[in-house]
Length: 493
Ligand code: BG6
Image (cartoon, rainbow, N blue to C red):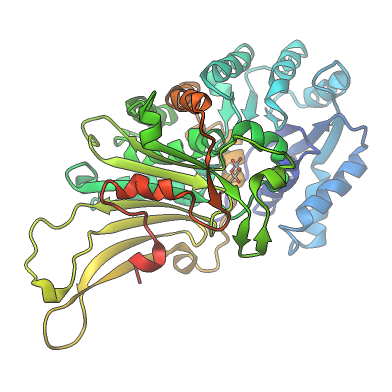
């Protein structure tokens, strides 16, 4: 990979600096960018949390948390990274520690300051108020927030208003970590950096699109949050709709952040509403029961939760439609769930069948072309094609694939984690891969009627056995249209 230029020195304050996100994602990502030379030794990463830790203890914790992902980091380089790490005990809900934080930041008033709110959304308001009260919201300041941005449209509007009361939209970075994944950005490259696909990218040539984000994991220690969210809020409102936007959007006239986001917004607004009785018809929600994962027997959702019962969905399938000129009539099938057979995220674009077959029955069936964009694992792009089976005799056709695995194409290059790019984009002030306020609200506007229909539905989510592809109704959702979910092994050799 070409070396990344070192960015001007910046200060990054992580509220929730001792929390899970900081440990698992933010600090390892910053370490990697430091090792790559993009974060210089003059920058500062300041953990901020309520614990009365000294900086030395915090550095020790940071060293422990980055040791896993970066165990091949030479000790002296890790020590250099730890020198840019500092800690301030701050309580976002009171005045405690704020004067200290301000004093440290004000020692370098000339640099970009980033406030990463890796804290519960209930604390966004007090954090923003104090950032304002202590004069830390100047033009060089930026605020970063993660989902959940609200749990419905009204609460999302409230959260956005809280942020907007202190920071301008240009200063506000709403992370959707899926947008930092290489393959998601590759969708833009694939669609708009090649002449091949765009003429075919419409309802006349595309039969349907499938977007699957499957996870093998269950609750993974996040029961408290997950049971109040569910798969629709946790995965569909943000990650999956963002993926859909990149597939469906019109070509933006430039890569300027707002130009790209304007096009995504149009897609969200063009989604055909699913409400009332249609919700039963076009959506399926499920909840896993005990079953078998690759690791062995696994408990059901409520057992994992430690509750008698729950109506939270751990699986969703939706037949969505983008009601505009390009896409009218093309179903976008979305499905996501926990405790599915494997961890796989992919977008499958199925083209229309050939108009007329020249080949007799002996040639075998003609399978329509498919473009498969694999986000994880084994990132890459495959194009399913029909070819002639080698050998003399009759003309028999066979499915095969043109395969581009990124691991092979870019052998030896490490694939950066999504947070590495996104954090550096915040430093650079480039919001292209972040969700704008109106995008978040448009996504909720589409999700809300589904949530309310489910809330009124007397039936609980449909059970599915852990280790399977969800309730049978999810299969029926696609099959009643005469289509099937893409299955890697069956469909392409
Ligand atoms: C998060 C969800 O946003 O994305 C999790 O809250 C989910 O429930 C995770 O497990 C999946 O991310 P990735 O990058 O592992 O596909």
